[in-house]
Image (cartoon, rainbow, N blue to C red):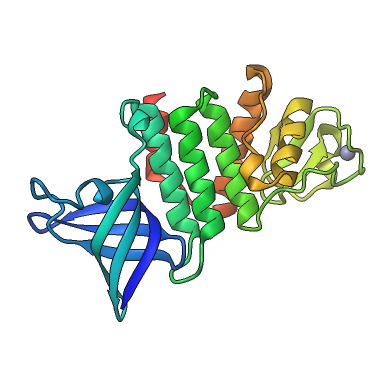
Length: 248
Ligand SMILES: [Zn+2]
């Protein structure tokens, strides 16, 4: 049967001489593994839509558990990202995280929209990369039900904490002095501004959670905590993240 949906390429692998195997995130049917025949041939009408991170209206032909790309109209190639290696790798990292969290066959509109928003921020907005990356990591955790409880100290209940920290395995905030009352595990320090940002990301609708600024002294600890929190919760690393760190 034919499936018409908008979709983004999360992963591409060259296959045979001129083909690719794509992992795409579709709006209506989640992750799909798609064969894209002839897309590496010069002049292929599908070449632009079969490249990493390309966002297109796709027509897929699906049979049993296989899908092939029949038609595609490119909607966004994120050209500014392709001119900036650091931001491109962050985009690929965002795609890798989405591929790890999306499910096959299930509707994925919220996840797809959030990935598109993240790429738009990376490609077209002048926000610091560290801010976009941190909001993406925390936003993905929230969309998947792993968002930290940012309301108050898990031990004493104080909302205005002195030296606030985020406990990575518990996903709860605490004052530095309250740490001994919590189960063992790594906690990352935050600032008051970082806690406010964490609350903003937890509470606002996903389409608006990138809309804040933070000075560098507050952003750096938030960025470290966001990355460590996501990796701890998912219990895995990401190749593109390792590449990004080698680049810094
Ligand atoms: Zn406390």
